[in-house]
Amino acid sequence: MLYAKLKSLKAKVRFEKLPVGTFKRLGDDLRKAGTLAGVGLVGMIVANDTIEVKEGIILFICGVLLWTFGHVCAYIADRVELKQKKDN
Image 1 (cartoon, helix red, strand yellow):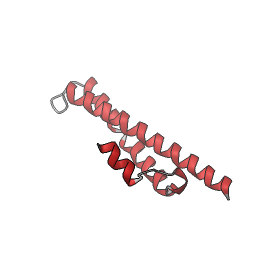
Image 2 (cartoon, helix red, strand yellow; image 1 turned 90 degrees about the horizontal axis):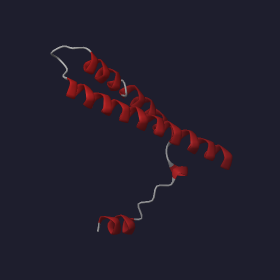
Image 3 (cartoon, helix red, strand yellow; image 1 turned 45 degrees about the vertical axis):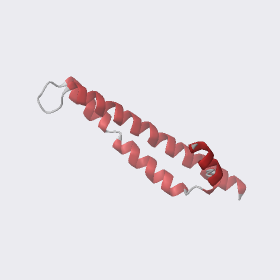
Image 4 (cartoon, one colour; image 1 turned 180 degrees about the vertical axis):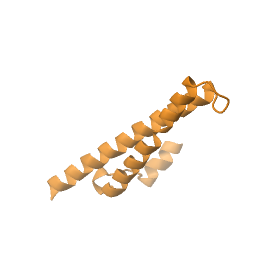
């Protein structure tokens, strides 16, 4: 049912029309937010009362995901920019 609604709205994303600068900034910010992975890693290794091992694992996974999405956004921005330059 959800697919039918999306299809009826014609929610297609065209990469040629994406704002390249926004994706570059988003990619940079997400890669910076990926430092949570380092905080999680320290929380898993260093024994103290502030970050437990489970919390460290969660922070590490979230940080790696944010870092990965940041690189994907930067890759998409670069590809769109190259395509736009090629078309002009």
